[in-house]
Length: 285
Image (cartoon, rainbow, N blue to C red):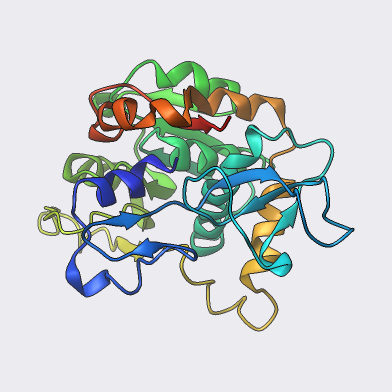
């Protein structure tokens, strides 16, 4: 489950202006409810073309035990990518797209505010760029061990590093956005990855915001950055995201395993934020 987006859907916070744009590729129903939503499904092909038969694949489908899909909408998993880890593909795609928007460079000091799955994957990719110094900032100190394992440093909001060359915001909160702006150095771009749905967001754009010439830039996985659109399509981007999952450390992001049949009783707690969860994984019979 992609907790950020699916929590917004679960809470009925998809604004009417976004009902069409927010449709998942194989969504059933319509916003606000009833709706069958989701886009991170991994399974085995039981019937279909010979080249797919018996293969594990990733598909942009809601949570269900069986589905019928056009072959060209499925992505075969490489043998080295475990089935369970492959559910991270859609979130990895979001993180990848954010780096395309942020344009980090070798040697940059980079701050990622928000230690959820998308924020941690963004930090993981940024930390692989030579010479970078990446810090994940989150109010939950338990995210520190995961951030460190993925190659980043960790800080609580009150100790956010200053004068950063690039900042990503992925906490979906006004407080997190304030922290991101505080971390930015003069002339820095803050990449806003959070999607707030219909919630109101406050940001301090007074004080020294203009004097420091800060930039606030949107990043959204629904489109590919314009400079790449002549060469990249969604299928190429998702294939790259899947290949980037070849790292056992990413299993740290898979926090809960839930039987599909138990999900009606378990998911409200996970999606409401009452439980500390990164990526809940639904397991089918």
